[in-house]
Amino acid sequence: MKGAVHMTKTRGFSAVMVVAASAVAFAFPTVAAAEKCGGQQVDERFRNVQSIGDDRIIGSGNNDTIVGSNGDDLIDGRGGRDRLCGGRGEDTLKGGGDTDKLYGNRGDDKLEGGDQRDILVGGIGEDSCSGGEGFDVVSGCESGRGDS
Figure 1: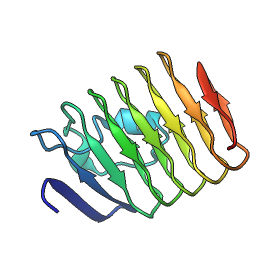
Figure 2: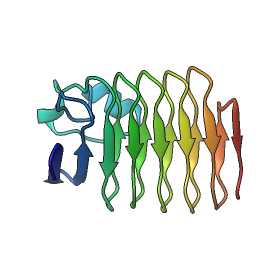
Figure 3: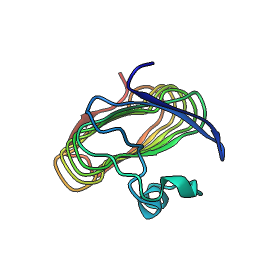
Figure 4: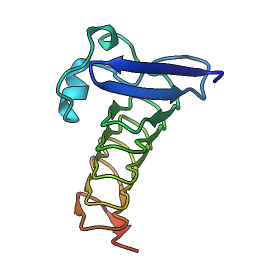
């Protein structure tokens, strides 16, 4: 896939990042940011890699932890029990079909749960949350809707 970074078997993390901007970077701005989003352990190689601009990050079918950075990012966790954390900017976080945890962070973010029990937490800004199917926990969102 042109313009993508493929990562597999990296301490239990597997994902594909599709980059819309000209700068290629991964989704962990710092180890501290990943831990804030609930990440347990981040490979040392990601410590100083930063995302610049608007990114489109697509997770895998595994349990992913993906943290956005500056810019208006689209983070799609796809399958697995994911932890998605927006950065600065107006981010869109999509959980997928499993039980996911989505954290808005800064900016006016859009958080979309999936078919299972999700946790959606807005941050600083006017966040919109949509729980989808299942019993969801929603906090810190200025607008949104429950199960469809």
